[in-house]
Amino acid sequence: MNKSELIEAMAQDAEISKVSAKKALESFIQHVSETLKNDGKISLVGFGTFSVSERAARQGINPSTKQPIEIAAKKVAKFKAGSELADAVNAGK
Image 1 (cartoon, rainbow, N blue to C red):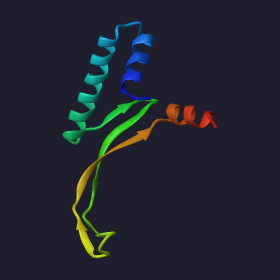
Image 2 (cartoon, rainbow, N blue to C red):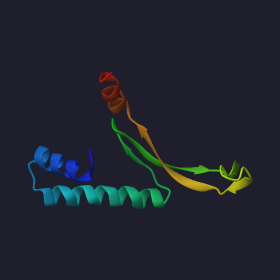
Image 3 (cartoon, rainbow, N blue to C red):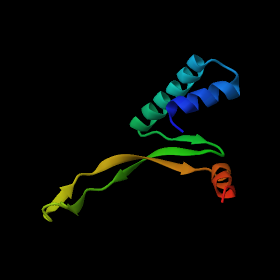
């Protein structure tokens, strides 16, 4: 499912216009991004938790030259599925 398909599904389920669904989705994305950018955390009970994790600097190898390289430390966005989402995914097996 891509973004436009998600917007269409949201509009249908909530019985709202696609324009309203798009605004709602974009607002959600903006608020999640802003919160994570400020090292915050968003917990949606049953669905999951969005958070930020820090990766330490480390040694790597350039695959084309086989020379060692230094990979810089960085922050990464993480998502941990909640129990209801995990159960729903596993029920599909």
